[in-house]
Image 1 (cartoon, helix red, strand yellow):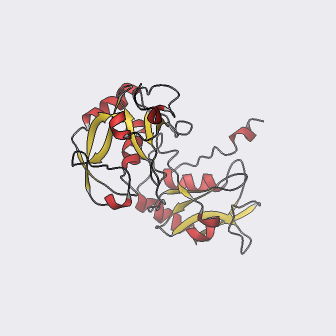
Image 2 (cartoon, helix red, strand yellow):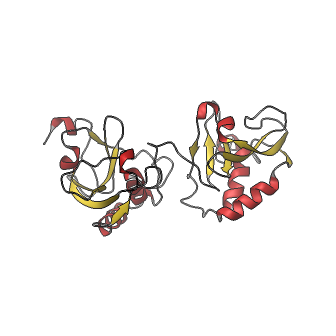
Image 3 (tube, rainbow, N blue to C red):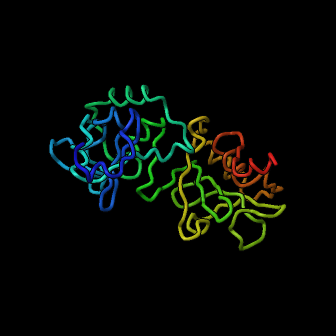
Length: 260
């Protein structure tokens, strides 16, 4: 069955289209399974170079290759990790495999935050690039999610340091609005993100087309200072942010409460 150390984390053989994760000392490497023994992944141009995700690759040319899973693992641990399936709809396996094989030999400029091995593999599986290994730097118009204890707070990035969001009308309270009145503000990400805990969320991008970033920013800045009636079920911080990004508001955080 091959190297025991490589297979010890696999509960079952990979299926076509599965996201394969290779564990490293600091970073993880990703590829897309073509069958039980092989995959397509983003790797170094030079044959034999070990070329997993690393900041040192930033700006370098990589290539899309077809290789055996065992050769990529090199006796290291790997596993099937379709970790985004609960939020994003995976494309049909045949479509994933065809898209992967169509890119063989393609040279790609590596970007640690926007175009790394994880972005490459998740783009094939879900149709959008997703990455969790690097600190995420929002771009203008991005939906930014701030995890909280009971529910999450949302805003729209103005640049890589500021966000427009709906917050409490009470001075000094930068948390998600919790009362009947809320105000639209521009604040630093670091002030809104407790302990710098935030992420760029693309959870609606599969089914909804984001508006042009310039239009998003124009509307966002025009709303700064406006006071609105806050409603947990019908008009919360997520409704506000998704309305800016997509043109129509949406929030799934409290959908279960509406059904009670």
